[in-house]
Amino acid sequence: MIDPAPPRPQAPSDAPAPRPPVPSDAPAPSRPSVPSDAPAPLVAAVARGIALVVVLPVRLAWELVAATGAALQRWLLAPVGRFVDRWLLRPLRWLLHHVFWLPLVWLGRGLAWVARTLIWQPLVWLFRNLVWVPLVWLGRGLAWLARILVWVPLVWLGRGLAWLARIVVWVPLVWLGRGLGWLARTVVWLPLAWLAYHLVWLPAAWLARRLAPLGGLLLVGLTAAGRWLLGGAAAVVRVLLRAATAVGRVLLGALRWAWWAAGRLLWWGYVVTLRPVVRGAGWLWRHTVVPVGRALAAAWRATVTPAARWLRHTVLDPIRLTTREVLTALGLRR
Image (cartoon, rainbow, N blue to C red; front, side, top):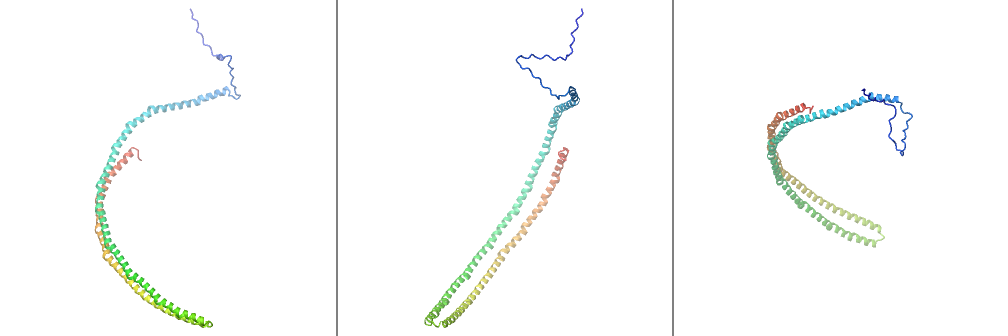
């Protein structure tokens, strides 16, 4: 028997596919309005062809590059970075920290302790005990000498001069002024007033009452009497001024002698007390402080300067050069 031939596939027809049934009560779908300027099927086909030929390869190349970069980052760069950080950078950092940095820190601390213990503290002790303490005691001694030999004598001298000026000058001047005032009042003013009242004013008044017609002659007589009285008063004033001038000369001579005596006393006090103290202080400075300072400078040049030079040339310069070479080799310094 001959088997029947298998059914042949039907060619696709241009008939539209069957649509699902639409309920009777549903509104009929509205067809979208096709714009009048829609591209023709040929233009759309050309655009699709250009997109397939140009855009699609570029997009596929970009996606390939992105996928390759992500794969490299995930499977190559990140593991290599973790490997380098864990097995190279961390050991190198630990090595630099424990082999270079910590020894440098301990070396710096040791050098600081050596400098503080062997250089700074001895220098401070030497300066305090050989320079500062002698200077303090010297200053206190000079202050005590200046107080005992200069200030106290000057104070007593000033008090003595003030007492002498008060007793010899001021009190006599006060009593002289009072005496001159009493003398002028008693010897000059009261007699002149009494004479003027009894010899001039009363006779003039009597004559004026009696000889009123002779007023011109009376005026001439009064004028002559006034001139005579004024001449007598001027003579008395000249005598008093001469006496005052003589007394003033005596007082000025006493003041001049007191000033000269005070100057001589001050000069004597300076020569006897202050100048020896100043010269002694200068001699003590030249023979104590200056030699001590020179000895300290020589000790510094003989001990500290060679030690510092040896430390710099032997320890610090090799450490600095080695550190620079290591940093240059590691690329951390140009």
